[in-house]
Length: 533
Image (tube, rainbow, N blue to C red; front, side):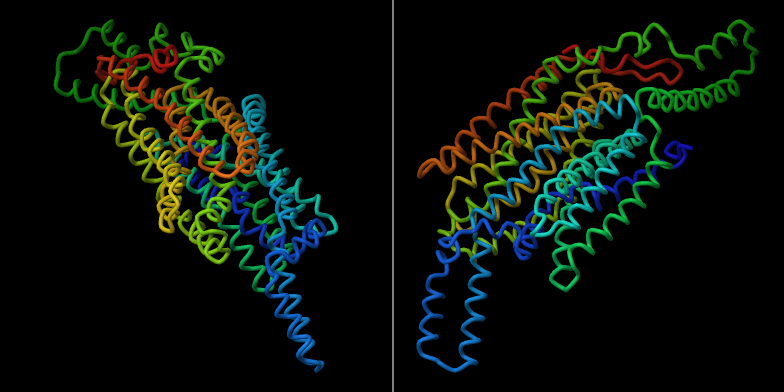
């Protein structure tokens, strides 16, 4: 029983709730790594120099206190101070942090790289089987995170992989419900992206629970149970067995046309008292209840390979790839950047990281803003020609993404105590708008049957962008002033993506056609002229 046909609003709300609770949990890494350091994961990687480097003055004061005081209570106090100093320095151990970040980098890259395979499985076996497999993967991941200990630290890698890949699958199998709401499609896609980013706050809740005495294991086991219950309900009852594709969309459009056509016929028959000849009446019924096969989308729809290798699709993939590199490098190097801005003042760096976490909580609002802009543009060009009404509406949202992305890079080039706040705000808009616009354009410009596969390719390419950040990190460390050169390099790449916007604008302006809607006849062919360009 597939309830999405009868209760589209309920299904959409449920899918959005899943995204909020589980989809992007892996991106709350900053809160999780704090807990892992507290528990001593990979503490044995720290060397003696790491231990005493940054708190030398504290230890000297402690040694002085030992020399001055010989009482037992004073010595206990001194030993306590040494322990606290050791605890602080353990948090600043580069080898420990590097090892933990390695697992995170592998997990986030794998999350995007494997979605091409996930999209194939969804196309081949359907939504239900695909979700059943990867819900199990997610549960294995949460249990690995629950039972990982400093003695079994390797469980972190399968745990992060399971949560990342499973969460991405949950999000991408849910996003198809946006097809149930044609007029708000872009807004709903943007909302999914915003909730995906916002779900990282769940790790912050786990951290708060940990600081209040609730063990990490208990939190992850509770999370596993809630996840199993909620996703099982939607997988078995709410979402389609296969997927929402062109067939369902055509049925929905046809039913709307027939409803309008029947209403028009009743009005016409009431006004015209003369009886139609039987032959004309039969012809009217046939025209109102069938689709012209000569323009059926199935007969002339471009193949998947032709769609992927079209100029529009290739440029869209490149546009997403470049801006994804900017996003990954900003997140990965935010500590290095802030240390450079504040001259290694750890207190200020910590305060700015907290500010960054709170600012990014506005992701839902920024995603909705992006979706509203896109949907407004679509309504503005709704009566235009087939190419123009798809290409021109996306130019403004893509232009905003370009502005957010380049603005973030520019502020990274300015060394000032205030610029990080502007960079954080722009990055929050940028992070949600990037994927919201990228996915919404795939939905609007290409066949719904190819959406899952195209999104898989897009995420695979962004996963490559996540891997490319590693040589950029090495460039950061190569010499003094390298941070400036890396950001200039990224700025050049970002500027090169303008050609995608320009070509979309030119192609859209060249289309001078208009759409004249006749509810009793099949509308103009869809998407074929778009894909051919």
